[in-house]
Image (cartoon, rainbow, N blue to C red; front, side, top):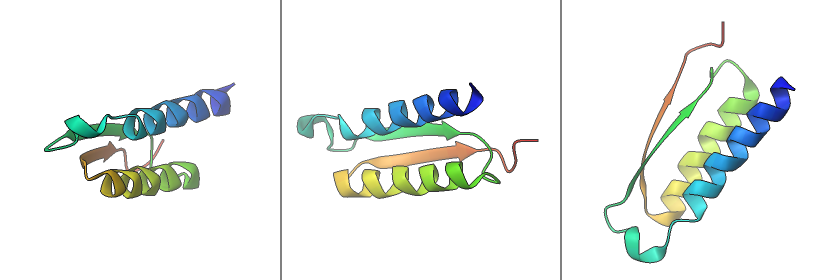
Length: 69
């Protein structure tokens, strides 16, 4: 159940970033909060958010805990 919730959250964040209309991307900023970066899943999510934001020309601020413990 916990993994399902994490995957659902990740999919939601990804969908939010890629669904921004082109006319609002000028100066647009997105914030994302992910769980601990000691988990490889969230490391990949962090990288994916940054890559997609760069591709869309959106400024992104990502906050994360150092670990999930």
